[in-house]
Length: 283
Image (cartoon, rainbow, N blue to C red; front, side, top):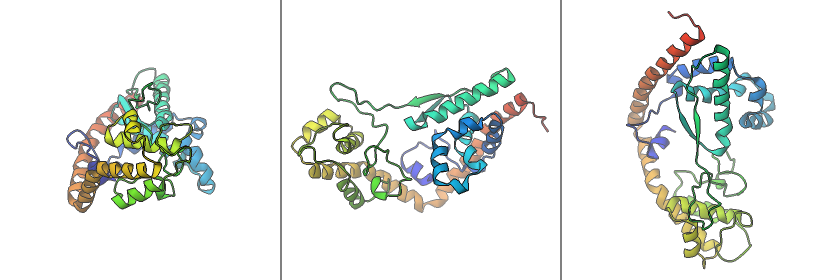
């Protein structure tokens, strides 16, 4: 995971990438926040509802707290002001904000920085279709569901380290339609094809209008070939860097270890303030 994040171009001089377990303040703050977390609220969180249906016999306290409360701790520990998320994660930021309100109301004073959601919305309403953010990429097998690494079918997604052959195969087998022989952008009648057009737009910086004009005489199969080549062109340098970093384990470990030390110092400053405000007796 660390090599993947670094390989995607996250600037190390501006970011801290580390093993969460090396910064114990995450777990400490999660426990404190758990005391203000309603079980009713937590049980309505999408990930809990999804996992509880799949793993009925494995229900435990960790499932309740792990995603929403730990995520809230991750955010508040570093006094984050803006949190970039996908649309499906907005509920977690709202939970964090509600949690901050609960703590502040109980103690009668501000303690945490209340975060705001930074949401990149898909722009599908542009009259001339000249812009697209592609905030959510949909599954290659089911255009009504988002592309996800947790999908049991590897054919539903493009992995960052997929080879050109993998990408050609996956996009070539992507579910589209038989609505028409040529390329048109219609999210309702042709959701599968629209998804591929949006993917092409995201990796080429071409507008949807320009793509549909340039490929208007292509059939779906031919457009899939062009889309696969463009996706590979975009991912190739990322793939190469990920594979290079995976081989250079000592460098990755060094970065992670040094980052953890810095993160721990920052986190401890927050926790000193939190412990004091919540009434814990210092040593």
